[in-house]
Amino acid sequence: MGLTDFIKKQFIDILQWNEDQDGVLAWRFPMQDMEIQNGASLTVRESQMAVFVNEGKVADVFGPGMYKLTTQTLPVLTYLKNWDKLFESPFKSDLYFFSTRLQIGRKWGTQQPVTIRDKDFGMVRLRAFGIYSYKMADPKKFFAELSGTRETYTVDDVEQQLRNLVVANMTGLFGSSELPFLDMAANQMLLSEKLKESMLPVFDKYGLALDNFAVENVSLPEELQKAIDTRISMGMMGDMGKFTQYQMANAIPLAAQNEGGLAGMGAGVGVGLGMGQMMAGTMAQTMAGVAQPAAAAPAAPAAEDPTAKLAKLKVMLDQNLITQADYDTAKAEVLKKMLG
Image (cartoon, rainbow, N blue to C red):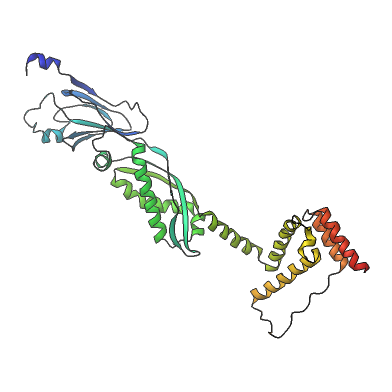
């Protein structure tokens, strides 16, 4: 090579990464036609690591600090390039910087419900989501498994891969666990710890250290959640007779909105209340396992005292369960029966 060509060549004396762009996990130092000078300075800042790569193979790894590049500081690269007797200067080698910052607030979640077996409900489809944080622990593994020779590799590039791994492990854990869904929802902290434990080796495979993992919510599809809410409500009622009366009371305002008001229910409010009591009694007997003789005719309900009936109507009016017009109509009907 002539003297003129030698003078025109550009040599690198300082190698460093300023991390001008957020969210970058790996960055390749731009070499182009430049070469590294013997004795060049390498600066690796806190929350960074640097890796020299020779022909696609990871050589020397540097943690935070300042280094003068010689055969002593580049032992692996020296061996690969046969510099044992003579350090070639300048030289070319790929240099990658890796960010070891803690990546916080990363989100995970199930895009579609996952189906698992459940002790209480047989098969359920559930959704889950939460957050996690991680940092770079082994750039050699990360380079080999994920980033490779790309100029930059960002948090967003690795995010989809990590989310899929989290959901896959979550599905496997839920499927093999005998913990019912209701207990999952009530023990999210324990569930978070179990999932973190199962995810640690998965992150380690890619050179990442899982710092924190949290399950923020475990839920069911809306239709199944409604069925569970109804079951819980019935359990809280306890007395099925009162539950039936409660259902009847809720139905009265709806009937009042229909054409004919309460009169359209058939025999009026009094009969409606009597029907509710009869249904409550029948359901209570059924729940208790009381069998009625086949030949015995059901006893006719005793006629309710008109005064008590009027009192019930007044209570329903005061509680806005019926309108003033419905109250007046039902009251007139009761008075008519009293006066004959």
